Amino acid sequence: MTYVRKKNEVYLKVETEQHIHKELSDYFCFDVPNAKFMPHYKKRVWDGKIRLYSPGTGEIYCGLYDYLEEFFNNKGYEYVVKQDDHYGIPQEDEEYVTPQSTAAFVGSLGLPFKARDYQLRGIYQALKSRRKLLLSPTGSGKSLIIYALVRWYMQKGLETLIIVPTTSLVEQMYKDFEIYGWKASAYCHKIRAGKEKYVDKPVVISTWQSIYKEGRNFFDRFDAVIGDEAHLYKAKSLSGILTKMVDTKYRIGLTGTLDGLQTHQLVLEGLFGSVDQVTKTKDLQKKGHLTPLKVNIILLKHGWVPFDYYQQEIEYLCMHERRNKFISKLAMDTVGNTLILFNYVEKHGEPLYELINSYNSNRRLFFIHGGIDTEDREEARRITESQKDAIIIASYGTFSTGINIRNLHNVIFASPSKSRVRNLQSIGRVLRKGENKSQATLYDIADDCTKGSYHNYTFRHLIERMKIYESEEFDYEVTKVRFKND
Image 1 (cartoon, rainbow, N blue to C red):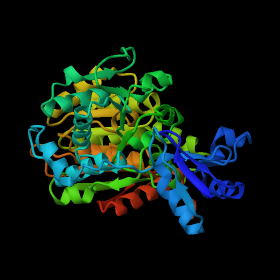
Image 2: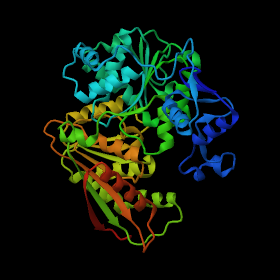
Image 3: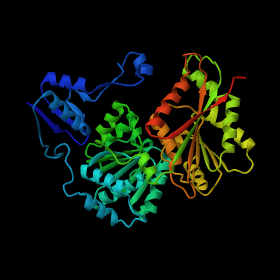
Image 4: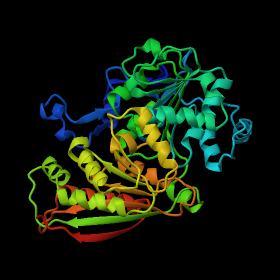
């Protein structure tokens, strides 16, 4: 007979025959995308696979119970779920949480506006299930969902850890709580580099970088953990935090998008819980909650330029003076506030900043990257909210995720990327509703250095982005610009 029980709030433990252990190991084994390019694979110390089930210990993430159950049912194997005296059984829910009680509770918070139906549904799903991965796009009001969860947990006397990817998001989350009418200073503690970590306040908002090296004793006090921008939780340092929280029963992840890779989704579901789609970008646009988007793909026709490897092509594009001048003049010609996103600070960000600064006479100009203090980034965001024609030149790492600028009209992709998560998160910066803002525009700068059937690396990335635009039903058009190499 096979037995399944909770070892703790991180892992399930399966007690079964040896051949079933082996079958489970194979069933939960996946190839890691692009593993062949990774150092450990090249050194032949790793086979390029991720294994979510350990045949030696019989352990698997608690959040994957549905998949475990599916395996047993498909195979026709009988199994018994054993109750643990301390941790209970997998998939316990909150018996008294209903859609009606959730709506009543949110209504009692005295919010300055009415919560939307899909927000109430997301809050209900998270509270009812205790574990959930909520998929809700940028501009859908994830911070309100987080706020309602925190207030519910506090009502039950629980302490909550909120993890965000950047220091800017620590500040933004804290300010959002204040906007919702809460005295955040009385209940919330913000952790950033150099800040005190051990405090008595029941809610802690922290970047993962500030706490991932802490031992289990730091995390033992938390009854609930909420991971914002959960798509970033693939990294070992991030998953390491959640695996240290062995007694944390309530686990909610929120993200605007997943990258479509099964391995990454299963890790996230394992750490948090099953996925629920709260709403979609297109639905929010139809209801007027997000701004309609026009995508202008500007395809620069360089002519035949041979590249031996990807990084060589990136170097060529970053240092291409005519290309940088084209992007800079495009930014100057835009109407409204404009965000330019780049990958490399010294190679690309600085040349773009210097060019735009040399052209610029009246527009406010900000240059944001990892070396800029959080306070200065927040100041740039705040000033831009009150401007009509500011230009922000920012690295993807600092401004592609989570930053909330409602008064943003245009975004320019100055650096190529094929990442579904990065592209959709970046597009999300420009979709938020703003005063007198009826249209948002993305300028996707792409480069055609092809010859015959040969496509250069970043041209292939463009093809991947076009697939994303089609899947999200974004309106896009391609403009070709003759751009022969001088």
